[in-house]
Image 1 (tube, rainbow, N blue to C red):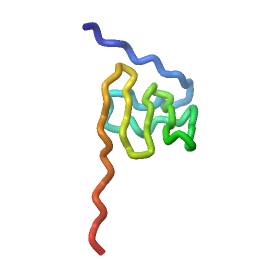
Image 2: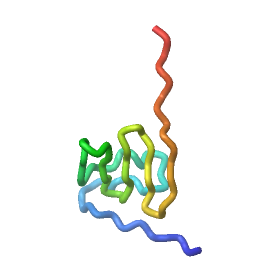
Image 3: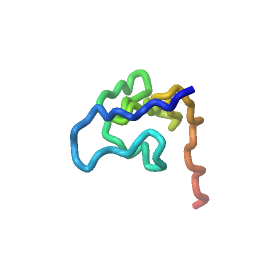
Image 4: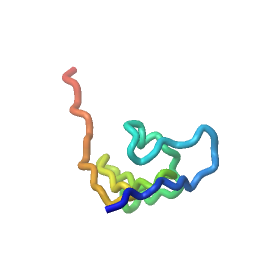
Length: 71
């Protein structure tokens, strides 16, 4: 299987993080559908309200909500 090359859909500077970067969720939102619970980021990631992600290459990142800290 060949690796797919990231092609950003935005032209802003600085460029958004790549889909493989640890900071990938910091990319700009290009489309949002809150009624359906997801947003499309300019690096091609679909970010779900439960913090799960669908990467452009089809990989799935499970939801990763932080645990609440005790008061």
